[in-house]
Image (tube, rainbow, N blue to C red; front, side, top):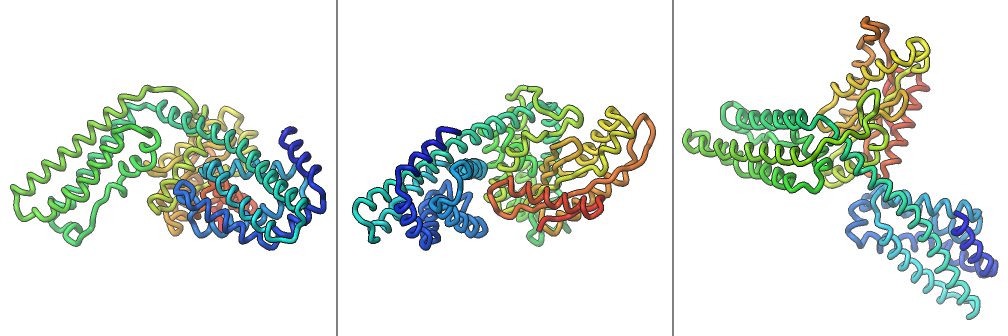
Amino acid sequence: MREPQQAWHDTLSETPEQVRRQVFDRIDPAAEAHADEFYTALLAHSEASKVLDHELVNRRLRASMAQWLRGLFSGEMSVGDIVARQQHIGEVHARIGVPIDLVAAAARVLKRAITRELCDGDLARDQLALAIQYVHELIDLAIDAMNTAYTSNAHRMARSDEAYRLFFLSQDMKAERERQKSQLLEWAHQILVRYYWDVQADASHGVVVGLGSSQFGLWLDHKASMLFEGAPEIGRIQRSVAHIETDLLPRLKDARGSHDEARAVIGRINQQVDEIKALLGSMFDRFIEAEDGRDNVTRLLNRRYVASVMRHEIAVSQRQDTGFAVLTIDIDHFARIVQTLGLESSDVVLSQVAEALLDSVRAGDFVFRIGDDQFLVLLVEVTPDAVMAVADGLRQRIGSTPLRVGGQASTTITVSIGVAMFDGHPDYQRLLDRADEALRQAKAGGRDRCVQAV
């Protein structure tokens, strides 16, 4: 930390105050235009545009960029504060997946634009040289500080991604394999009923029973794609599913009047389903079990996996244009429960809350224990209209379930829930902060209630 600050001090001390003031006077009125130039250059790269090309993000980040420029050159912040600010920006870039090399490339465009503006001014030749050097050094120092924080945070998240995959591999993989095979067969049964056996079915009106709405489809899109990232079977499974949905099902619908033709199409569908089953088995069998990372009490995912899952779901949401939400859940008056029941019995309470949450969510949803008495639920593919009903259903289920402590039913507990829908911003921490703020409002409002973030 001392070295970046010293470099900053050196640049400031070697640049006359008058020159620094002249630079700021040129940058201040043009900050918004420079912000546009910076983001135009940044968004020209597909890797940046896919996470930043969102109206809400663009509006906020462009305003923040103008503010960053003014803060960098105004001289109003201490060196320690300004270095810390650059490091924070680097951490945000790592979280939302903006490559630091693209930020540096856009910064070069920014330096050229500011240099041209200084050259068009009325600075004396010696002052102009000092001003240009000052601008280049200050922006370079800012990028260096961002890069240091970006690299550290990116490495930490990469380790978290790997740990998350290891966690899933630590499950009873045989049981999970059979569960997903069962869900696959259930989907296959549904489509055959809809498209062939039930002649009054909605298929005659063009309704499609898509894999995405099934339990197996949710698991495939949201968990398998992350757990088995890079596995060749994933792509083959997806191609088989697409073949069933886009080719075979329409053919089956058209063949309903011909038994022989329909039977041939059904045979092809069953063949594709059998292939998917074989691919699932191969994929599961290739991975070994590794016990790592579950919460000791509830056996849920713990906090270390939140970042990995959140970034994955943000990418899925942006790619598929679907919504998701996070629910932060707090057991009301948990300290009093611990004091009354003792630590061992309070662990039983935590396990029962975890069990109730797991029993209430779908195959593609995620449940974490993130604190002593706090849980987090991530609901995939949920709409703003539905999320509060889901949250309140969880609250009511937990509140109406008697606690089984010491072999006997005891008093029930209540929970407070903060709800936040993903709004398109690529920084997952912002979504978590919104859910936490909603939880604080729920507790301040009397507990045993759900509050949705605005």
